[in-house]
Length: 390
Image (cartoon, rainbow, N blue to C red; front, top):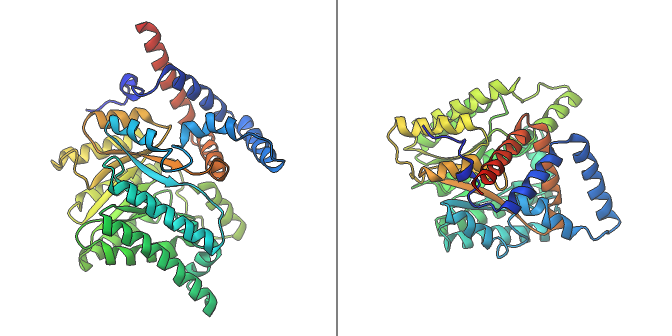
């Protein structure tokens, strides 16, 4: 049985200085007051144009991001690759609304596909549909009772063309592409478009992957239906399986608008469905592919056991584990050390543009029970191990 307690393997790529920086960062993000104040201070400093970019780049950006450009990410890509861990380049700018910005983002995502084609250490590409389309159009298209105007239909058609352009680039270069999940009030739109892309490009293998957020209580039935349709229509169903990233926002909106929340009643129900989804996907591996994006040790072990139970090769390229850069190295490095396929999500982009992503990371670390204390405990354990060795 694989163990995630080996901190020597987990932090083998980290210098003492790296561990010290990570220790203080997780100490800060573990304090809700400091996170709240830090968000306010950062936004205020940017508003009055204080020169804080250098501070951010040397601290939280360095922990959770690969660089400002693909070229700047090369050091991180090579470092991870040295330990058998792949990189998923995630262009993490948010909040764009113009056609010009959307088209520029498409070209950047396609550039990550070309980088992957020429580098075996980059196994996937990824993008968010809301990064290349106006959110309001996706939301209106999500409602079956709403009628889009001719102009809105044209705008949605342009968005679909941009998605198709990215998926075709993935198909042409044999690089699988993850389409990220988003808020439930635009997710039906994303699911429909993604499924159409799968029909178009997943005939021989999973090139286009949909993302399923298991914090929603309706996703197991959704997953079963999607795999059934894929089998009936003879295409492969790629899944990036995650617990999810919009839980608080989902609950607040459901309460505000007086509808039943799509969120699981508790963490135990979410964990149960995540592990069930793993079993569903692996049992249909002839028709599926999976990237299990999880920082949960128990779920990682469930997937390891399923792979072993069905005598699937550890390095079968239809099955990947993934974690975020700067987090859960005890899972990533120990899995890779045992020969499993592992990749890290490596966000990148101009520091100022990536700040919303970084603040969300800080928020998530504060709100997810035990996440920060676990990271701190592992860092302390490794620091003590190194001290005894000297």
